[in-house]
Length: 341
Image (cartoon, rainbow, N blue to C red; front, side):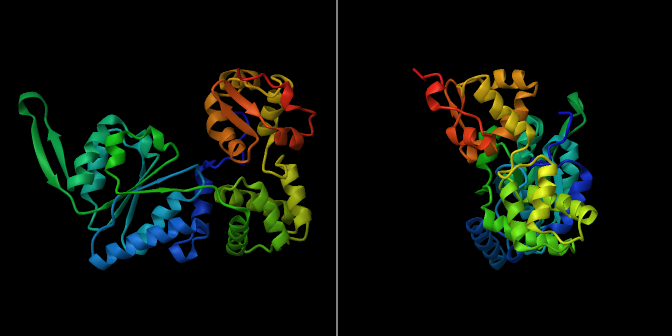
């Protein structure tokens, strides 16, 4: 895409991750939202600490920007151990992982982001490490090849993925705990915005925090990103205090409407209604019409549209809802849609 989307849950650049790091809560008591998940993790960690054991391997899955990396850091802090972080695409050879595994102490946390993108070789290398806390490392080649059995300390693997269905069954089965992170409701996002504003040392009133919470697509990372954009706008255009009126002007200037839709979202809905009479239409046809990649629409646009009921998936393709047409202000009737016979 030629223009970055600020309402995507993915990290836009490494600099943003440094800023996010300063806003992350360090312990479960400071973590806002996902109450059931927090309670389950607390029980798991308290039980492990009482037994003086490492926690079971944990798989965190859900859309990007909801706090999987944050939870991994919190788990390490709660257990009082170190966290070693890496990502699936960064591990190319077994030697890359061997160096990390042999440096882990009892109870340490190994966090692998995008774990569904591990290569089959690395994945198979992980099986005995997760199950028996040992690895079989092959040295030399041919007739001189030898297998060295290397014991490991009892560590905890925390895997994070946005595509849990792409994990192989053997790898998935080796995780003892599975936790799903869902989109946040507006009231929790409002609390997150207020907390982040305090950490950023900027003034914000509750109405302004509410405006941002309604436009951040249920995602804390987007909420913090929008807050920073609104803060910059306020410092230049106003007296530095973020009010609801200023927040609305700032987000409108960014092209983000009252439901958190940006230009690409609105363009997709407009094409579906005006070109394809509301659907059903195949995702490939939509991508071609919009001149966008199919993966962009499936991974970055559709999830939120499905969540708010603007799009439905059917066997014959995507269909737009009446509420989407109402939001777009386009005259539309469900009767115009191609019948699914």
